[in-house]
Image 1: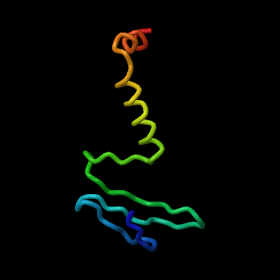
Image 2 (image 1 turned 90 degrees about the vertical axis):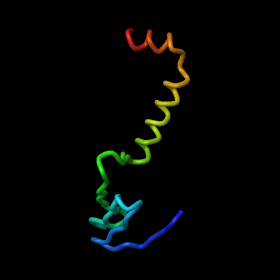
Image 3 (image 1 turned 180 degrees about the horizontal axis):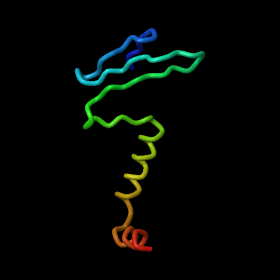
Length: 72
């Protein structure tokens, strides 16, 4: 893991097309802004993990059971 220090209004660039800017710092909370192309998905980690779990569950479900669940 790369650890960087940034101050308010400072930024970093990832992969030449994603810019992450520190917008505000209040106590132990940091507000960031992310500028990325529309085809680059950006998720909070907890949401990303939920999506991954849902995808795993869908991939492992029996096709017939999935259809039954879909159509009630």
